[in-house]
Image (cartoon, helix red, strand yellow):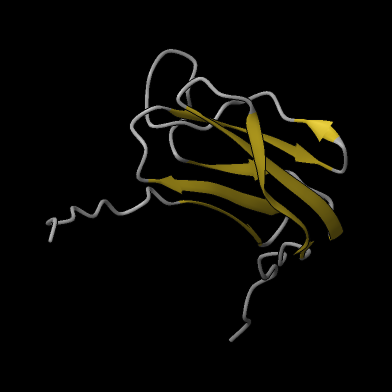
Length: 107
């Protein structure tokens, strides 16, 4: 009988969370080398997610000044120099930012 060795497959996941006029996107990967490209409403964003390196913003990023409503977010991840695979493709709800209270309490 041969002794078997097992290796766990590396896992890569992506997420997008809507907030008050912003969307937080992130990728979590067991791989050493990967890059993530993000599209919002079919518009490629001007940043690259990744574990580090020149021009990389890190594994997560907050997209600010997003108009309230539903937005389609697509995250494509390329691993070890390979072609990208779509890891996330879904709608994210963005809420309106709460205005700070104004005025003063009179005594």
